[in-house]
Length: 76
Image (cartoon, one colour):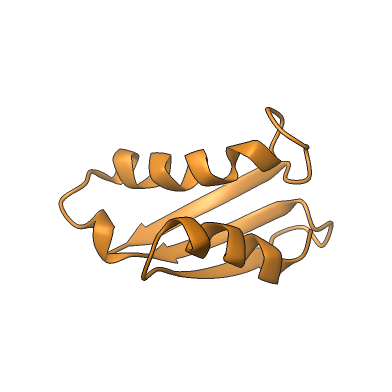
């Protein structure tokens, strides 16, 4: 999975969001996600990260395992 695909997965589920994706290890399975979405406003940091994690979870160990790890940064 490439960075553009990861970004598209996240932004397709959070209308009006942007997602900057960084390959943290060069292996295309450890991603840094910097997600900006107006819908995060008023949510705790934990709630914001949970929204993003729920989106990528089907691609992690509970799904097809194409993503091994994510480092999430969020802002509204």
